[in-house]
Image (cartoon, rainbow, N blue to C red; front, side):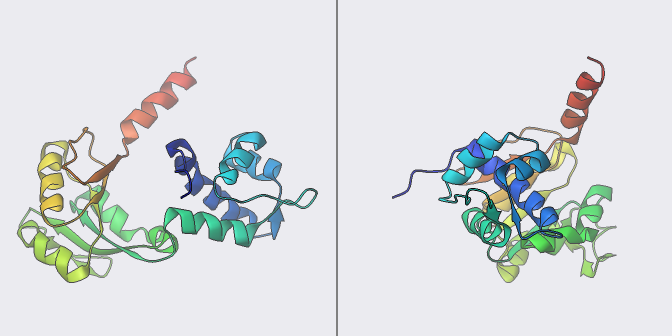
Length: 205
């Protein structure tokens, strides 16, 4: 059995994949130095991270971009399509629904739900906003595996619990609050305010 890949390496793999996609527009191969510059890490880190994948470049030639991209996709589980539900049909939820870039990574927004009866029934990017009380049916009918929380902070924990009760075990939280994950549920948090705060710190130092 292979040793598990460190979380820090897993966190960098999607960045490498995006950079490889950009480089592939004009090249079929790339060196660790070229990829390191594009990804904002050093080349030694690149080589160490790829060693966990069993990917080793050829001296003087570098990495075959197509093969390396395929290996990263396999490790990340990006070799199939994941149905996704967005909870919260406000400005953020609707913007995410309209964003077409998820499909290239294998994530398909198949449902949008909201608790507001004034929003239910409204169209958004080919979908119809559905009521929160139908979440269990929606998840079951669409074999949904991933949920995105785009609700206000006050509703986020309840949303996590309802997603978990519906059988969703992978959740991306965009609400500005730290949530408690029910047993067997993985939550990733993206807090734009925190990231902007970090930028402000570096801007003023």
